[in-house]
Structures are given as structure tokens and as C-alpha cells.
Length: 146
Image (cartoon, rainbow, N blue to C red; front, side, top):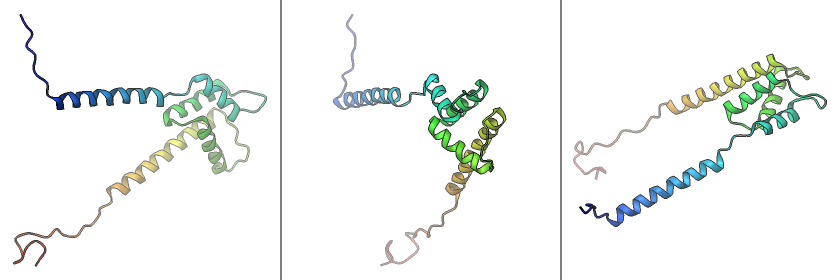
């Protein structure tokens, strides 16, 4: 019994291959661009940036910092810059990084992110006034009033 096949037009083939190519490119793009930092790389870099030269960070503090990195999708260097700004904002020149300050830092970053998103949402919902649209049948002339 022969298979009944449908004749596929050229445009259908082109659309199929374009979609297939786009999906393959997208899959490859995601594989190459979205590579989360490896845990060892984070640990070493976080210890280099945040710990004193003679000691390493405690595991619970390191866990909080890695959690911040994952939540905000930022690099350890960006996190360090945010930490420097936070410690200047808090006023203490030598703000020590212990578990309590790491959690406070995490809360502060979250509040900052929420404030920024609220500000952006407010800017988007701001009402814009636009002039009235001319009506076609109201005047004696055409749409342009001639």
C-alpha cells in the first residue's frame, strides 16, 4: 500500500528550513552565551575580592555572596563594586563582611532593585496626551479640511 504524501510547496519548505535554522542558532547561542560561573571560579574570585589576604571567607558568608550572584546574574567583580558602594553608604570605613552584614547587603540590593523597577513601571504608565484625531464626516471638505 503506497504512502499518501502531500506535495509541499516551495514557500512551505523555505519557512520550515528558516524556522529550523533559527531554532538551531538560538540553541547554540544559548549554550555559548549563558554559561553560569563555575562554583570554584566564584569561590576563588570571591575570596580574592572580599577576604583578607591571610584568610578565606567563612562558608556561610561565601554562600550568601554566591546566592546574590545567582539572583542578580552579576559577576563577582560587579558584586564587589556594589559592596564598596554599600560600605561607603553605611558610613563605616572598615565594614567587616560577616553573615549579618552579608544578609543586610543582600536586602539592600533587593530593595534597590525593587525601587528601580517601580520607577521604570511608573515611567511606562505615565499618561501621554495626544491631540484629537480628525473626524472624516464632520467638516465640509475632505480629511485635511480643504
